[in-house]
Every structure is written in C-alpha cells, then in structure tokens.
Length: 201
Image 1 (cartoon, rainbow, N blue to C red):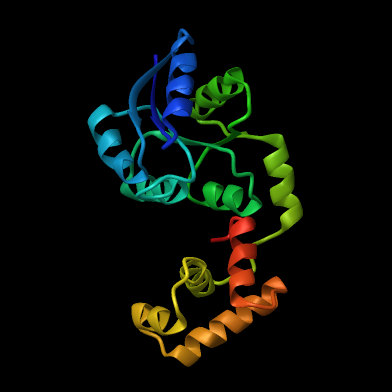
Image 2 (tube, rainbow, N blue to C red):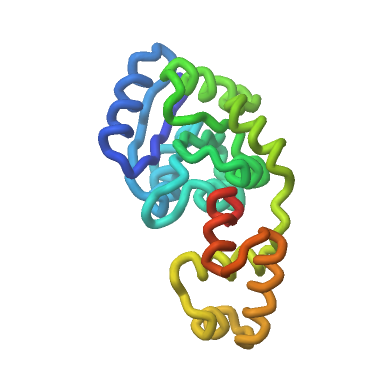
C-alpha cells in the first residue's frame, strides 16, 4: 500500500482527489492539509510515501515546501498537482527534488499513475508542461533579482525592500533595472508580473 499525503487549500478539490484516490486498491490517503506550512509536521506525523502538493497555498507555496522537505531529508517522494502550468515552476520543481508534475485537470488515473511511478523511483511529467518549459528556456534572473521582484510584486516600496534586504536604495534600483532589461519590461511592476507568469518568482 502506498501512503499518500494531500496538500491543497481548496477543500472541495482536496476532498474529491482523496475520495478518488481512495478507490485505487494500492493507494491510501493518510493525511490531508490545507496550508503549505502544515506539510512538514504532517509528513513527520504520518510518514507518507508520496506527498502530493498544490503550488499556490497559504502559509508556504508548494515549491518552497518541496525544497524544505528535500533539504530536511524527508523520505517521501514529491508530486506537484497544479493548475499553474508556468514553465519556471517545472524547472524549479525539478531542481528541488520533485519527481512528479501533474496538471489539476488530468484524469485521476493519471495522478494515480504518477504517484505509483514516483514512489517507484521514477519521474512523471505532464507532457504539455514539459514542452512549455523546454520552449521557455532558462530563468535569466539571479537569486537577488528574483527576491527583489518577488517583494516588488507584493507592492513593497523600494526603501522598504532596501531595509529588508540590507541594501542601499540605489542598489535595489540597479537590480530592478537589470531585471527589467532582461525581461523586456518597461516598469518594475511589469517585470514582476512577467517573472511571476513565467514561474520564475
């Protein structure tokens, strides 16, 4: 029996997925959580074989959760189930040790197959998402540029970003200018939006 943890903040979707997976003879949903920051404790308490994570969740997004689980040495394999097919998400997921990436509109049988495959040590990638990621190319942003754009995207002012990251305002503006050039954006807000749409922040 493959023990599965589900993490999704949409209660109806999580419940439906749990019920459908429960019909599979070799799968057992042992835990369900609605927030990303609840996942590590649930993994420690229930010891699942596979953690199925949504990307957009309160508390902590699924990709950050995956990175934390990987860094902590958690033994469970990780599968991302998401409606966000941004190419940067797939690349970041693969870099953080995620073994499966499935679209939310996929049939339950596809998710079940993905869970079995990652549990067996393999990889399962949605074909369309993989093709999009290949076509999009690599993320051109540095870690610092991503960090600053992420804060910009939340409406944080330059002065506050500078204070938060222990940088001068001029340095923050330079990072923003470079990021805007790389992304072909005319404003910092547009640069943040583009980076988010690509899944780079």
